[in-house]
Amino acid sequence: MKAKHQRLVLVVLALAALIGAALLASYALRNQASYFYLPEQMEADPPEVGQAVRLGGMVAPNSLQTLTDGITVTFTVTGRENSAIPVRYAGILPDLFVEGSGVVAEGRLAADGTFVADNLLAKHDENYVPRELEGMSEHQAAEMAEDTTVGLE
Image (tube, rainbow, N blue to C red; front, top):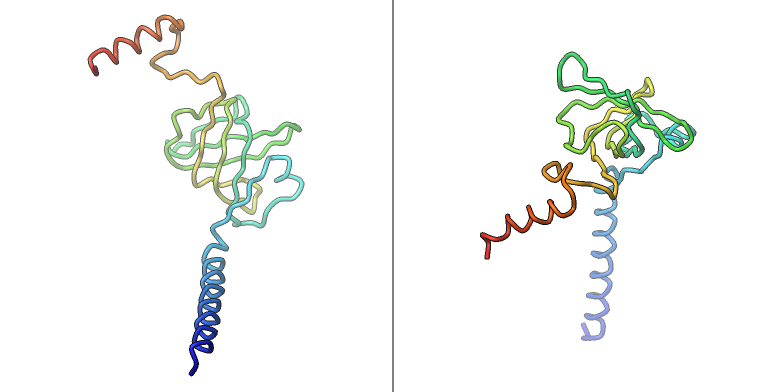
């Protein structure tokens, strides 16, 4: 076989291997993609029951309840248009998770319309202050930061 034909066969085989790898990767990742829904979107066009999605919004005030098992919590995620989706989560809550804060819940919609979360991601606003610095003035916080870095030099 001539060198020209060998190169052509190698190029065709490499192209076939590349297409095969892309198809295999897309097949493997087809269930890993999770769509993001706002409460308004989930009410208007809910995902299929059991499909992995993300729900983002604000935790409604006075909606957070801990069930009798001590681990499972229920709360309501609201959007801008007075829409509300009930959420159930069993696990340890993130430190920043409080009523009135932003949350992204990863999970699935149950048949009864409740969103069953597997993971919660709490969001903080741009005015976030660590617990250690709450109640301090800007000057006091700067002094505390200075005191903690003096011994590192």
